[in-house]
Length: 378
Image (cartoon, rainbow, N blue to C red; front, side, top):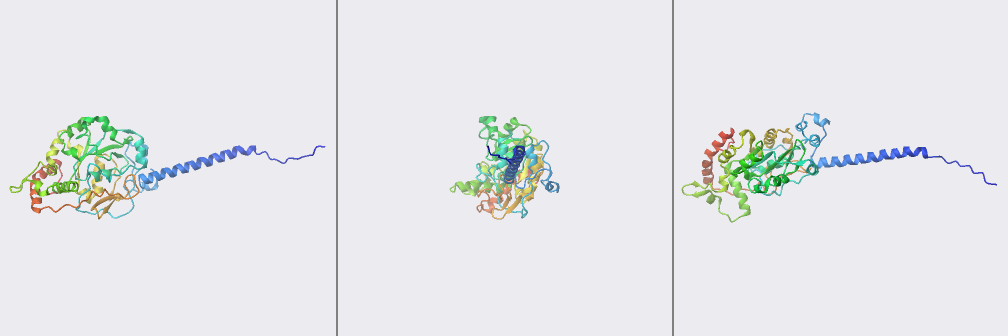
């Protein structure tokens, strides 16, 4: 006789689809949270305090909480810079403004968002160029502007319109970062302002180019220029001996580049043959120190951008004597320019300084008249 076996098994097959759906939902939720976490981390690193449109912080009326300019790419619209952490407001100083040498070791590396942009969009020729002047504060201005989500700038100076023009526009374009629709491509090479061929060459590329010139008291600029050269070549003659063709007669040597660069009116005449004054913005190197947000506001207006960069992005570095960024592009940490900035100037004979002021005065007056702005150097 076969044993009578009763099976009390439960058919679990009806529950399998439910379990599969639950598992699938769990996996999708996990992946979504992981991607959101990664994205948030990247955004925080690249654009400190980045927020999404429509969040409460965008409606509180603070600077930088406005909608991005029309036509900007989606990511550019979503990633708006909020002001950095509360801190000391910028204070005036008379120290040397930050400025770049041909290679700037303190220039920022692109952050995660910038690297994303550099892998998206397309490379374009610049729509705006910082063309001058050397030792005026061009590196500081460029680094400050790179905080703006709708500005993409190449860090190194291309020197295309003065040294590399024969390499062609394809070579020049390839140096530029990739940009999305609505973003501005920029570069800076301070020597363009004193290069005779540069205005015609830039005009041939784009007659609508927006030009930015950072200017500074030409006497202080010349001393700063000399100080930079002295740091590289300690054996050069004194500033006083290089300034004069004849010390007895007081004849200034205008062939010395440190002197020649500061004759701004002469150089501007060359640029006005190819560009109207409405396409040239002059930034005060002195006010870039005492009121960086104010000067950056003028630049953002000139470029047709929202005033996202405000005084809350800066703090004043007492050691260097000029403002630094609380949170720069590609970093969540404060950023000042390199140790080559803010060098101590050598003591210059005050009679020589006074003679230089007398030499520059008529050129300064003409420059004020041409630009319609008194920079207060006299």
